[in-house]
Image 1 (tube, rainbow, N blue to C red):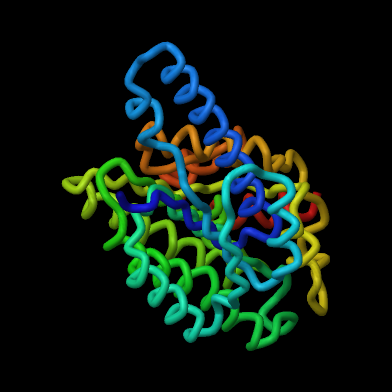
Image 2: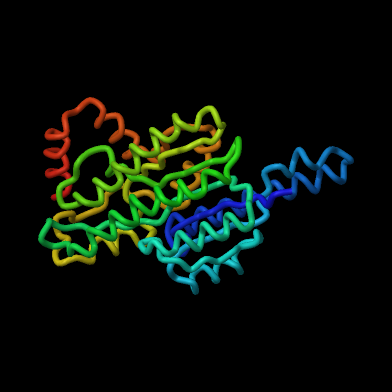
Length: 281
């Protein structure tokens, strides 16, 4: 029998790490139900079909990934890889082809943003945003899909920033727009195979490293406050629930839900004008 696994990128912190924790809790529940069914002489296979044998966690910071081992009960395979480097994908390809796992979840949570005008953000940071937010997520998906079967779930961690152009967050929002459109189209392509793709589009998340990293530029004062920011536990809980329901888009919070609806009807120029006002508050 093939090993059932989940693959989570960006797992050393933020949403990626929280996905690992919440998936582990979900697996604990499944294991308890399976054990209970066995005691009652029921068919435990019906309870254990969705139990993961292992989670493959990917990020640059190996020490952070190793810390997760003591926090969860599911077996972790730590993969300290930099997904801005193409050679990392050859390592992943070799493991997948060698072990032939049944991938039940692919969660592309690796990514980062930078706040500032075009002159405040280095070309290197711009390139890395595109490489990590766009190319790495796409490459991971293309690599992993041949190892996914009916009922599997792909979660692409996009952003509410992908719904419209954002001055002073321009490269980041453009990269998330790419991932959002890619996710929406891929979902349709995979419908017949029973693989669900969900674009997860949260608003600011206050208790991750994202905001601190985004502000680390020559001038990040263009965005002064982050009102009504979400929390990672709520974002991940809603994202997993929406994925299990097979929803094409998860907007885990009031602000991102309203934003998604508004961006469908209000011209981009008007939305950018509203943004120009809100970012100064």
